Length: 74
Image (tube, rainbow, N blue to C red):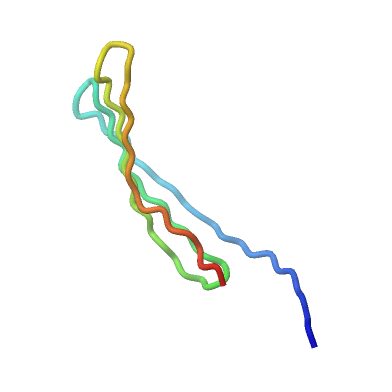
């Protein structure tokens, strides 16, 4: 006997970040995202950091690093 079902799962997430400017040409944005996986009920915190640096007149370099997990497949 085979039975197929379709289920909708909610996977809410919350993201927050700060904006810090230690110098006039540097903008730091540390942040974190919290995800709750509907299938397992597990919560995951994902820290992140981005930065904008006005390296020269009219030009900006952007950097970013963080933890970007995926929900479980099953």
